Image (tube, rainbow, N blue to C red; front, top):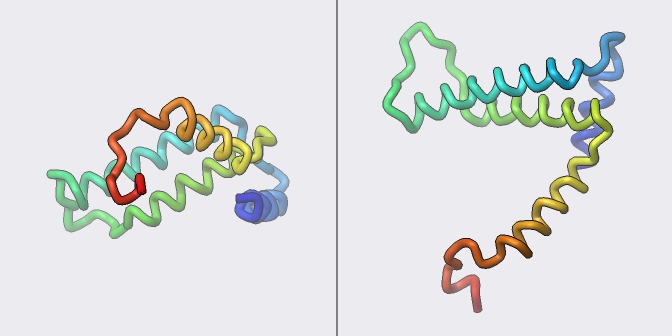
Length: 107
């Protein structure tokens, strides 16, 4: 994760404008989430693409979301690996018995 954050920071650092403000990044993230939702709906929902619509993939849209998320974290000096570790600790402790385990994983 640190490598991804460093790669995005190196890219953004070459521009005078730098990172967008947190509110602008949240707006970008919302926009990208909408694009992801549209693709999921096309491939897994009831709304087929129009013939005139550009061909995109869920993978591309997830990549866009990841880029904006990393920009957001970098702009606020948040280490995403630390954030991830905190969340996994929460799931592995507080929520450890929340879901039904698959038998072969319990052995």
